[in-house]
Length: 263
Image (cartoon, rainbow, N blue to C red; front, side):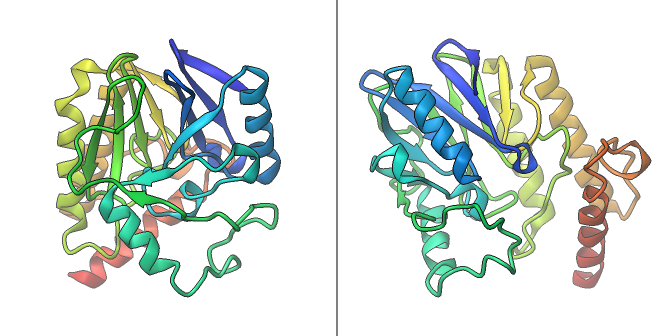
């Protein structure tokens, strides 16, 4: 089911980790960001769009993780984009295929069209399409070539895998300095926060402008705690974690261990 979060901008949430697909209406059709996960949900989304008279004219993947790179034939063959760095990372990682079992990919996830994205021009500041003005906020937090999209006309920030109310910041273990990369990304988002009325994380609940700033500060506090070797006080981990999301504490423990190993 599509839920409108601003005029011409809707969200379709998957059962898988509350993944959010974002639909943005343009002049000739819609832009679909991070399309979704389970096949039935992708087909449902395609049906909802068709019933509303919308054609998908472009896709965008916020970063190079499998659950943000999916597509379905029912959505059509519109071009799909990502940042140049994201697209290059996808090509490298998928050169030998993908081991679905290793990555914990459910059986009902369609992988035939996984990762077929074209890179935007390097350091592109705008998404090129006939629709609302969209600023590409590229950073290095969480994954190479990660991007948030600021849809200026609607005041909506599509955050990718940042600013979640259920997931703690997940650092990129391949980065040379994952802590500083994450803090720099939060600063970039903070710089445009005055223009944001709605934030849509890759996973979790949609929030308003006040929640955006709260989430920035919560994520920053978590990353500072990791940097300083302190145990973070964070409602997303430990006994305060939302039922069903207790595994996030294991993610946190893994990050602490990897940072300790890096010294």
